[in-house]
Amino acid sequence: MSGYLRRWVFYCWSTLKPPFDIAGDLDTPVSAFMKLAAFEPRFLLESVEGGERLARYSFIGFG
Image (cartoon, rainbow, N blue to C red):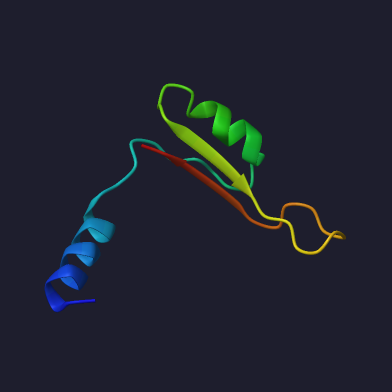
């Protein structure tokens, strides 16, 4: 990654804030996803490791 791109990513990451906060310990991934209903498109990805665990990680995004 070039120095310019690295600085730009750091600037965006450190200065841009989401329009609201979602407390991670109060919501399930599905309920957090439903709160983003006004934002389209949106996605919810759940990870599964092997077959013995369910949804260790959740990724929620909108664009």
